[in-house]
Length: 220
Image (cartoon, rainbow, N blue to C red):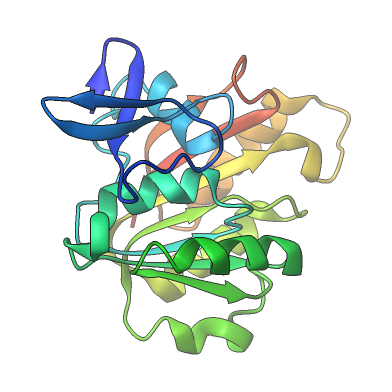
């Protein structure tokens, strides 16, 4: 739900704040404020000019999140896709390479059915791909590794349904330095995505909320 400039998700774990965010009731229903300074997906929702209402998956969708981290964005995604006690019958497969992050995600999943945490490297599909039995409706990648576009393109081709939504959160500083600046990196990645047959619906600059980052919303 968007209220003015603030974004809120219906809390799937009532009376519980995941990372210290504000809780508020609208018409008797509890919502959590989505802090765009703590979430690249939240920042993209705030900054999108054309696709603000399209970036998120639909309730009940199957989603793949590469680089789920400690779960800030993931918790709001779960609110939207699964809801309390997974009333929407959604599924979010959350991949992360860090054992520490995975512990946090496992703890979160105990209160959020529909969330499936998996320890794995986003590049190595053979190690965890069995957890993605069918192609997904929505895919988000947020990994700080060189070759982010290559990883994303490979994941989209293998896991995303035709016509599905893909989001690449790109960190320029994680790419191999060319000396041309982050704008040149963002342009080069856009060209690489298009050459791979992906359609860029919107390219969203996150400067000011998540500096050095750009989010690409694509369809295949």
